[in-house]
Amino acid sequence: MPAHTSERWKKLKSDWYILLIALVLSLFVWVLYDMSLGYDTYVQYSVEVTSALAGYDEKAVSNELLVLQGRGDGYYVLLKKLRRSKVERIRIEVDPSYFHPVEDVPDRFFVWTEDIEVEVAQALSDKFEPAYFDTRQLTFNFSPRSFKTVPVNIKSNISCKSQYMLTSDIEVTPDSVRIYGRTEDLQFVNAVQTKFLSLSGVDRSGSGSVELEPVRGVRIELKRVNYSFTVARYVEKSAMVDVGVTNVPRGYELMVLPRKVNVVYRAAFTGVDDAFVPEVAVDYNDYADSRSGKVIPHLLNGTGDIFSYVISPLPLECILTER
Image (cartoon, helix red, strand yellow):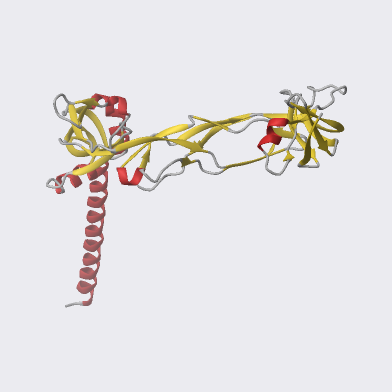
């Protein structure tokens, strides 16, 4: 073959290769574009719900398939056609108020699909955009569960700013919750705990919510509870005062040693005037109940403006004599 013919053949082959590659790339781009377009189709799913139905397990699977009409991209439509024999499952959380008991069928409930359209759309996200629900209602069989009510214990560490203090216990609302599970699992659960609440530098009353710690094998009706606490500014003072006695029977005298004690008390910053004098006394009934004759005295005039107090020394020695 002449040299010039060989060169033309090589150039022609090169051009054909370039053309073939261009055609393949064009086809690939066209397929990508076509697959990204939206197509009308119908799909069907099994539905698993999570709900806080009182007295029942939190999960159940629909007895029927949910059939939808809508729009999805080419990838989604192709994938559904390839998996036609396999029914996928979507998982949604449903408010218990949407469930209605099926008459004469124990432990079976139904839900109108129009009530869960938003939840279904969110579960499908960007895969598929539902336009019409062919299935009007779904039924679910929930397994019954035992339940009982237990108190809520809050775990906390709240430290206040200097000259501020907690003036009440931390209140939890609700202070008890219902828990569900097998009888053998519930019998050992006597309370539920919150997650640890840690606050520092607090200088005012506060409130909020805190999560409950999960309990293995048990469902708790709530995930969070509310808490509140009261904080006030205080001033700390002290006074050396005589110890009195109360409720001593006629004909007897109760002597207290020592006769004077020191009282260190914390009062509201603006609640107690400088003329306030603590009154401390020993109750005869406490002495009568004591085997050792040693008694802890009490502050008699501790109003709501007195947040806390410490008496020293303690305990006090008491001697009963006849008059």
